[in-house]
Length: 288
Image (cartoon, rainbow, N blue to C red; front, side):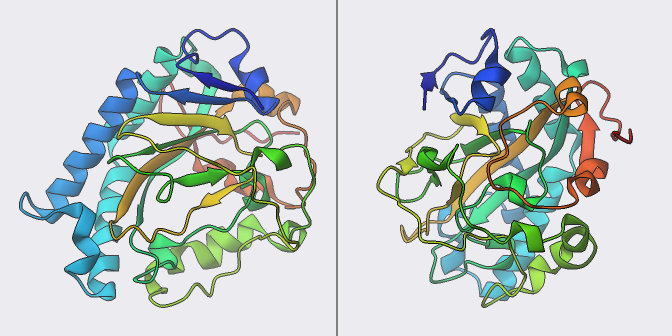
């Protein structure tokens, strides 16, 4: 695996590098700082200026926490401002927004593990996004809003990029998730009862990559990398932002990372969630 530090801007062949497993760590992106600042602004709008978001879970019941966090997440994801930042992120990389689609950005809120690790704060087991119906050409981004240590961050296990993992994706459908399961997140207050695609074998975690980041610093990597949520036992709530990009011509041509173990049968079910990065119009083209 190649790790590139502050090399994404105007990188010739960045998509091909990511499709081959390369990871880009970006600490100086202007749009990363803008995304961080907008997330902080959204959090403060909902919580008020006198609430410390890092200890929010110590001040609310789980039910109140879920209600509050759901408001923050919805307000952030559905804003016009965050879509404009994603467009500008593509421009900052030296790419043309007209060539890209994006999935709606998510603001993730992960409190101390023993307080809540289900529903709106689900701690994702190691997975590939492709198991969840993502396409092979998906480019992932992840950044903390506030600084995180390696025991609060997300994990990537590059050893498995080209190594198959026995998993349950063949028995999991994105259509079912969208229609029946995704909206139940706010109901999961004690344990996660929704079915997720998960590994069906033990994993070697000795080569797992956990990067401590400052707020606004970003990792860009392939959606086919095996990654997950590090159980947060830090005592603080973790806020992070992620969004996904798809190059339109790569999507149409079937280019992307090699599929080593994904069995999800209906990735096209997610196409209605994609937006054109230049116009913000929904992507409705049927691929054949």
